[in-house]
Every structure is written in C-alpha cells, then in structure tokens.
Image 1 (cartoon, helix red, strand yellow):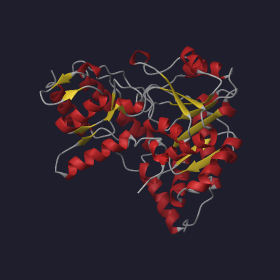
Image 2 (cartoon, one colour):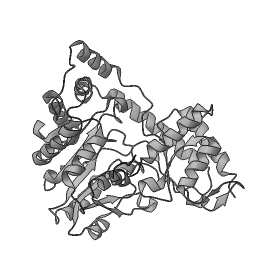
Image 3 (spheres, one colour):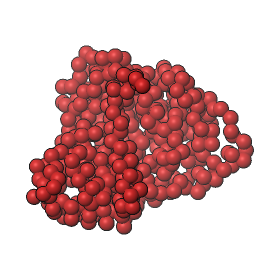
Image 4 (tube, helix red, strand yellow):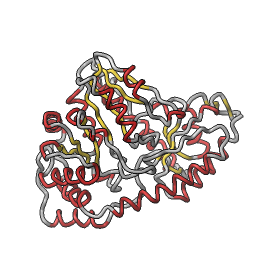
Length: 396
C-alpha cells in the first residue's frame, strides 16, 4: 500500500517513542523507571472531578461550539486577567483538544510554504514538526547551558530575515526549565517592535510550575499584544493530561482563523472536560500550588543526585519538571559492548542498561543533552538516578 508523502515531512515524537519502548520492556517483565514523559504523577483535584460528574448528570453530552462554550471562554478571560493582568474577550479565545492542537491550529493558520519560523533551542519536540507539516522552514536560534538556555535580543535580531513569519517559544521551557524574566522579555519585545510582520507564539502551559517567582507573559507588552498568540491549557498545572483541553488567546482575526482550522479537524472539545475546566480555572488553585511545591522538593533532590555523577553539566531548571543536562562527556565511551556516540545512544544505553527511560536531546534541537523528568515519585527518582549512576560508571 502506498501512503501519502505527507508522512515524510515530519517525525514521530521522541517523547512518545521512548515511552513506547519503556512499555515494551515492561511487557517483558522488566522494571522500567519512567523519567521520559511530561505528565504530572498526581490525580486531578477532587473539586474538578466533581464538576465533571455534575456535568454528566446534567446531561452536558451534546456537540459543543467549535471555539468552546461561552462560559469557558469567559473563564479563560477571567484567569488571564487574574493571573497575568491581560485583557481578553471571549472572541479572542479558542478552546482545543489539548495545547498541542492549539499549537497546530495556530501554526497552520499562520505559516505558508517557505515562511521562516524562529525557534530558540532547546524546544519541545512538536514545534519543529508542526512547522514542517505547514511547509514552513525551521530556523533554530542556538542557546547554551551557560546562557541558562535563553536567547538574547542580539541573537534574535540576527536571525530575522524578510521571510520570518513566526517566533515560537515556551516559558517555562520544555525541556530546559528556562524561565524568561520580565526584563529578558522586554529586551526581546524591543526587537519585535521593529518587525511588525512577525507573530509571537508564547507557550505558557507550565505557568504554575515556576521555581523563581511570578510568571511573565510576553503578551503584557501593549505594542506586541495583538501579535502574540498565548498558548495554555490544563494538563500540567491541574494534572489533567487525559482530559485534553488547551486554549489560545489571540487577536480576533487569528482566533477566527484557528476556529476555521479546528472546525475541519475535530470541531468542539469534549463537553464534560469544558465544564470541569470552568471550575478548574475559576475556583481554588491550592491543589496546583501544592503540586508545584512537591515539584520544588523533587527538583532539589534531582540536582543533588546529578551532582554526584562525573561529567554531567546540569543547569538548574527555573520551571517545569525536567532537567536537561549536557551528557557529551560520555560520548565516545564504551562499556565493552555498547559505545555511546550521541544523545540517542546515551538514552538507549540508559534504557537498556539501567532500565530508566529518558528522551534524547536531538529531538529538542540540542544534541549534547538528554531530558529527564522529575514528574515521578521521590522513591522512583532516587532509584532511577542510582541506576543511572551505576550504568554510567561502566563507561570508559
């Protein structure tokens, strides 16, 4: 059977690929510790689940409007004003089946064949692949551990050409945990003011998991706001990965374009999830803050454990729940059977030798690094890093 050439434009997400490999080993009876997936190991808060149960009992079981129920879009506006001091109306909001779909909608609505899309490295694996699906050209702006994986204004300006259409980034960042301060965003904003053709896609899905202070959105700068597409959702901050709800806040023209795209792919998001989301966004955030406190504890433990491993360079993450260490010290080393030549080899060596799953850095645009999640129990984290240390000690 001959399949479409469309499938050749993009790759399977390495995050999902590594999770699949881990599951295959578990099926053989091997105890695999999962430090690969970006999923909180917490249950959805009780008051949100109760709202979903009520919605079922109240028969919210029919097709939903493509951009989302009006009360949910109003709740998103309330959240953005409360948490970010951003003023939006329901016409600026489109609710989707996860933030990934929100990203896809925006990219397909904005990027034409040959348009250049600037993406600072490291970046979430799906960014580059969605640009390829839209036939855009990915232009990477390289950052380093020494820069705490954040670009500066000079790097941004040097990357801009007449073909630049979109800039996309996340703060807090998946995979590095980098968080841009207001001052750092202001410096980037000054550059964007010179180039009115560029739209800024700001992925803020890890907003509540911040270890250094208040979350800052680049949409706060009045001169840029109409050109910013804010992406957010419920998966990370509310432990609602399986509920599948994300949203954008954008200029009404962009929102309408995203609604048009979504109308041909999925139409409206799950009715029950939407009703639960109203409760999540407008009521008690204590469970989210408590979850963030636990991630803070785990972050400290992981950084302590990594310091004991020779050759690993690990910047402290300022948000999200990952570390993204430089492991290139081990490239070229062997245990006598397996030689590690790159981050893919490193991740597979750790999986097959230590039975710990991670994600190779090439997928995130940083070939010297590997992503490890600390969205797992403290017990599993400690056991996992003990195994990793023992496995790496065999490489000479």
